[in-house]
Length: 130
Length: 502
Image (cartoon, rainbow over all chains, first blue to last red; front, side, top):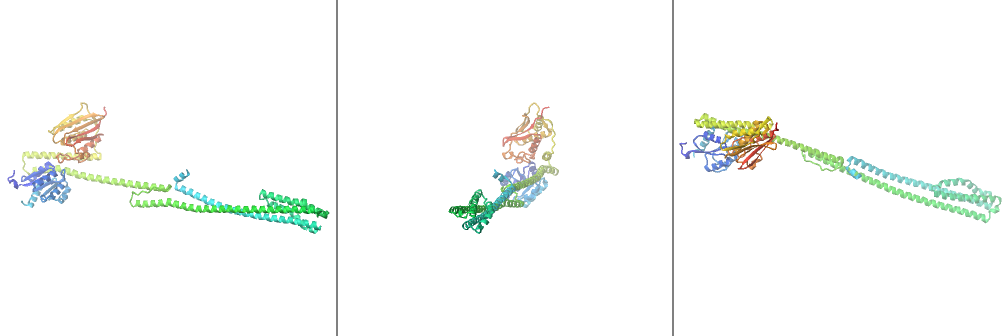
């Protein structure tokens, strides 16, 4: 798929319960990334601790554990405290809470694919190449 | 008996009865005092009478002595001059005797004594003195004989003894009467003063009793009212006091109870209003959220199709997603509207004769083609299953149960659908071999937006289906329930009264 060597591809963790929306996130960001998907909070956290992704796209309304709780645990984790997190939510009033909990960006649902891609690019540039 | 009556009687009755008794006591004390004074007065009168009688007696005795002196002088001297005391005394005697007898008539015994004395005197005058005067006038020597003189001296001595005895008797009687009167009056005065002192004590006690049984409870009611006015509606008074005061206390407690009850009612109403307000705004926000998720897919895939070059296969796939999500949106909107209409009681349900058997058969056929993993097993009797109702709404309930049975048995399996007539009801049941319902969810499974772990399992739905189904079944006069074991599947069933034949 990609001409870049595997190690160079940025790793994106998509934590979202709706299958279609996970597909849509992948389509929005394009082929330049390596994707990891989790349908709920606990498996998302487990995956994040294992792979240390470069960016996390996190839904707030997750079964089992709310996205805000997942975010709090990420921020409390020494290895993941600095990982950029984009929160996506259909709860239009949750942007403030998300930013307070440590989100770097808030993207409301329904989202524009370009807006999401730009947000990810901006965060990865800020982070700098590592 | 009278005591019990008094105890249960009103305060005003007690006041009146108590006052009347006290008035009687005071009147009795005064009556006794008046009696004492009258007794003393009577004693004084008797004493005066006794003195008068004594004086009359002495005067009479003197008159008799005068008679005797005159007679004796005349007999000794024979001279008429010496007869002077006799003559005047003899003249005054009848009146004196009458007067004496009139005075000495206080008792039959006294009268008797006076009569004896008077008879003695009369006898002396009539049968001795007058004959002696007569004899002295005709034959003076005859009257000077010893026999005549001795006879006179003897009779006179008798009379004087009679006088002495009469006076002694009178004196004894008078002193006895006086001391008796004094004793009576002393007793009466002591009794009356005692009665008055007792009345004074009783009146004071009476006053204290009423102060205690009116003033104190009234003070307590006033304090209670102040506390009540200050907002402490739990204020209650100890039920004591009698009659009207007890009624006042009871009325106060009833009032406080009513006030507290109406405040509780208001608070309840407020809480219910706040709750329904909160539920409404929660519903709005849940609806918005539930609509945005499929909308995100629709808009997102549309924009991908518009902006990217995609293969024909991808286009078909994305358009399929868009169509499914748009349908999901439409179904969600219908569910929300149904829930709202059901909650407001505005959902109209037509009542026509419906064969539940046909409804079950049609819905099962619709679902049969949708899932290759599931086997739908239908069991229906040959005869119709008639109910009165709305065939579209009944079909909606069966479809919801079938859709749940398929959705919640993702591994596939047999879904058993059965319709039967049973004790006046038509019973429809749908069983699956799916995930079952966790115990903690079973109580609220018919609530709105209850989806359990469906989201995690990737099972779609609004969480409104069972809430709507229950409302629809209840609107048909039936009931809906389920049995379920986690990991082993669920059986949902509903019963609707059989339509009367004909």
